[in-house]
Length: 80
Image (cartoon, rainbow, N blue to C red; front, side, top):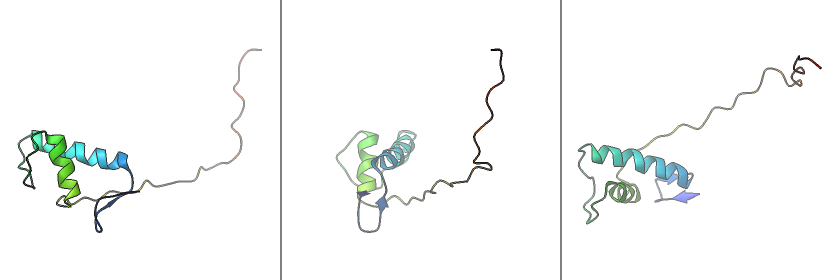
């Protein structure tokens, strides 16, 4: 598990990169950085914002559904 701080827990590095990429796009679009940093690249600024816990985020876990039928699918019809 990738932990950033005590309060801000991200369950995977993949999700952390996705959130940083989304924030980097906002920064490229003109949003002001939420932390004081010497970094100039939007991706690095976004990662530092995540680390500083100044970004508020929510994410939903995927919904798992059961299949209607657990039987094997019928064999395909075709010429033999």
